Length: 290
Image (cartoon, helix red, strand yellow):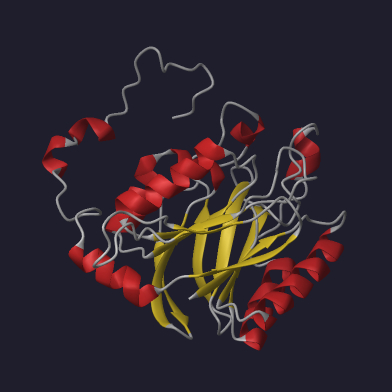
């Protein structure tokens, strides 16, 4: 399964952003992609910092807006799944959302960011209500995919619950500096859950972003090898462009049937404290939302 990471910046208007997104999806299809993934909140370029909330909140669009529908039609035309991201209009305040269209143009998955960055301006977003998976029909066969967005990556529970729901590949739209520690988080999420993770970031030049979109396949050991292998399929540089990650699904599935991670040897009965809502020092924060 080939996933194209569209490491591109949004334009200054929704219409120009749409045109650019369509152009890059077409290029991704020419490169043989089964799925094209955009960075976080592409409809407005994640431009929510240094602006009045009322200004950027007014840029929220519904999930059935012509901007979004255009990518559904394009997915059908190109016979390629497309994960488009947006600042979604929502009754309790905008959401940070991914809409995944399958290659037939149908909506396979709609996910809103659960772990909003409440220590900053994202406190004005409405958090999502859960993690979801979908069976995605591709030229490589049916693949179980899930999604998490940027800050979700920093919580092991996000990828864990997606693994428990059967995810084989997790899509991660992103908008932040991808340095060694954040890349290490993604590597760890892929390793401990025995799944693939594809992350698409904005290029350098977009404020607080630096490119370095990445893909990890989670396969740490190969039969007959004496040690572990690097699970990183690719790490982009900082420039604008398309990077295509090629996931070997047959190898991943064989690995998941045979290796020790994921849900093979967990002891859930001992994990009750993880679901506690109690927060003690030193983790008490006045701006934390329930």
